[in-house]
Every structure is written in structure tokens, then in C-alpha cells.
Amino acid sequence: MVMQRTFVMIKPDGVKRGLIGEIISRFEKRGLKIVSLKMVKMSRDIAEKLYDEHKGKSFFEELVNYVTSGPVVCMVIEGDDVVQVIRRMIGNTDPKEAPPGTIRGDYALSKSENVIHASDSIEKAQREMSLFFDKSDL
Image (tube, rainbow, N blue to C red):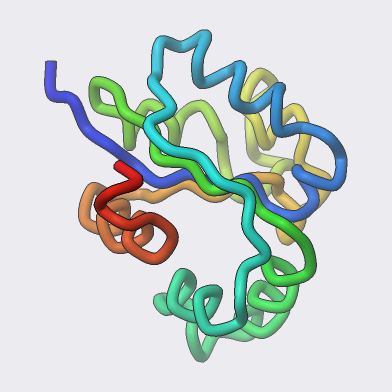
């Protein structure tokens, strides 16, 4: 077993629709540990840093505007192979391609309003966690 930590964020549509408890419950029922959690109103600067890899793409502005449109819930979650486990749990970015039983398959309304973000690698998780959490939070 290799314990890892990853960054997960419930996006504004998930918060607005009251899905926070349901999503956290899924992670806990899977045996994952919530190490730290906070609700924040993300600044444009942080949003641009979070989605830096998409800068220059056609959807970048829409994405930044969307994630700064309301509160988000940021979490650090720990578990065995947690990055891959959570990526499987959340499903494809496009809810039409996300299987039922995944978070996006069950709750996402569109490719842009897809409820949740999760790091796709350990390296990105480290960078993304540092945008929202101090070492003392972890």
C-alpha cells in the first residue's frame, strides 16, 4: 500500500445544488480520509493558477469565470493510490461519457458544469494543494 494525498474540489454547481455531503460521503465510504477541507470563494488569480495548463484554450475564460462564480469546497484526501481511485470515482469530464455510479455520471449537468475537480497526478496534486492549503492545514 502506498498512501498518497490528492486535491479535490467541489465546483460551484455542486455546492449550489447541495451535493457536498453526498460527494464527501462517497469518498469516506470508499475508505478514503479527508485530511483537510475548506469552503472558499476562489479568486481569479488562484483560478488561473489552478487551470494554468488550459491557458490559451478556447474554454479557459469560461472555466475561470465558472469556478469563481460561487463558493467551492477544497479538500485534501488521503488513501492508497488515491489519485487513481478518485479519478475513477469521479468519471469522465464529459458526463455523457461518465458511467452511472461515478460522481459526474450521476450528478454532472454538462461538460462545463461537471460538479468536481480532482488532480490527475501526484505532481499536480502537490501544486494544487499548495494553492489552497498551508502546510499547517495538512
